[in-house]
Image 1 (cartoon, rainbow, N blue to C red):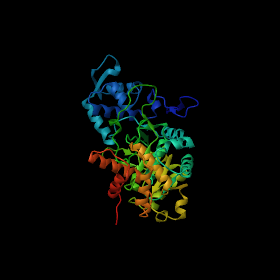
Image 2 (image 1 turned 60 degrees about the horizontal axis):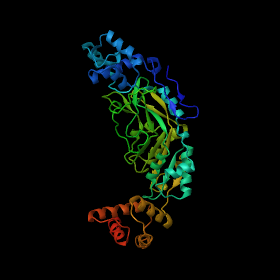
Image 3 (image 1 turned 30 degrees about the vertical axis):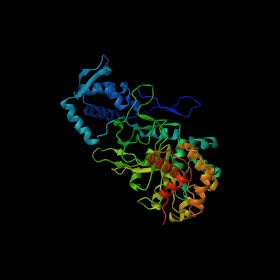
Length: 445
């Protein structure tokens, strides 16, 4: 029997996942939890029952009977106490328990929060799906406040986000395509629940990655390689009635660049530890997965897109275990492809028909370029001068037929600040400093 889902309030969209009070309510096999207790004691030395409970993210009422069974079977013994309650008893393995634990470790070396059953994971992903993201014009304006984009482009992006379907963002380099993907994350401010691990077919898949599953208030985007083990992460020990096997996180944002391979989209098995690490799309469930620099991966663009065909169309993915068993997993991901390559280099009409929304991010015109200059100057605390802006545009753009790029103002002001710091002078947006910065920034044939 698995734990029932319910919302904290009828009008709230956030879930309340009640803490299991018995082994049956965890949805896990009794022997499975027994093995976890043995491994936890083995690695922890002489942990108290409370420490074992906290490490497994299970209530004491769940493990109390398991510890008593292990003691009766002479696998563990009580070797001390840190207090006066049964939760304060300290446990250690007996010689018989050491032998038993070695057998358990031969099957799997996973130690950490108890996994959640797969059927419960499916229910939770469905209940907190990306369809719940609200992409209203007001929220879009707030999310894209640090960028200067024309209103039509913002409207296109908002429509794509609201649909929850795949997005293709393309255009010349340096105009903020990757930053747009990060701004989308600003819309993902609501809370979701991410399991530390899930159990399916008796196998453990580690899901939680502290580098991409962030507490509310943090902003970060990285391409995950190997995440620290769940037992190495800070796990809340207070008992507030919630199931501690789920981490409370903002919706994930994962960005995979040119290093992305097809192997990153499959279950990764450790033959030593004997458990699996979830692929990118599982870690990104209920969030955003960005394929940055699309077309520059080590695999062909069409092979990469073909890998996403079934997930994009049917909202499920198929993963295969070492044993050959296949599991159908939820695919609740806002998939964003971003590239500065010409679309003709990536595929034909049939190729792009598979991606629902296409958004071109063009070079800014003079008006937008000046607006970006003003915004960056304000962010840097440097006084903006209209005549200097005209000089910059006339000398280094119109005079050289150089295209405007949205990233240029930020880089030019950064250079002005760097040079001013070296000279121990206050940075000023004037002709002299613009000339110095542009001579350093632009490459001339």
